[in-house]
Image 1 (cartoon, rainbow, N blue to C red):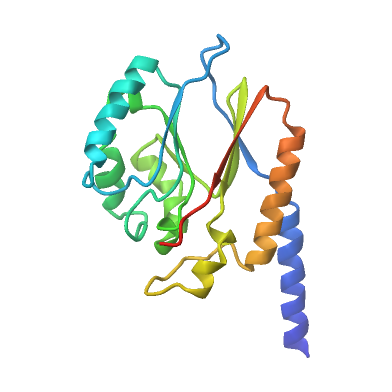
Image 2: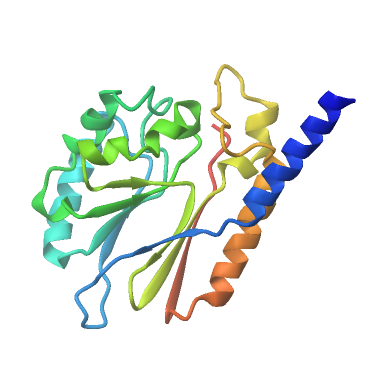
Length: 213
């Protein structure tokens, strides 16, 4: 009876804590002339292989031409199975050493994809990675205020029941998102609230819908 009561109190405490949360907000200064310029990339973390280096080169060229303000990464940042930890060399090999163009030395706003959930998600979101490369910022769901526009990032991997029911040979890191029904309902509620409160002229959604592979 005592154990059951403790478990019930723990669940209530968890729900209360989660329901009081809001999507984190980040301020992204722009040039102040009413324009916003950024690049979007996803499914890229391959240590330079599978044309990653070639795409990075073109990103650098276009980034310089447009004089971009920042970069958005839509997930699957590190193939095939995310990062193994904060010191995994794949972070440098797939990010720092690939996106070397001067124009890409701007803030990167990143979310997790399904391949990232197959590794250490906590490590990928850790501030320790920012000490390695200050461009990096990765969270589950958040808002970026870029003056004339607000960008809403929502990682929906936890919304996909397929990954829970059919993990195949993969091990998913669900820390921080279980119970999934509670987590996803809170994310949707917080997103709706943030959209209603936004006064930005432009509202851009990054709702990452991963494939079942």
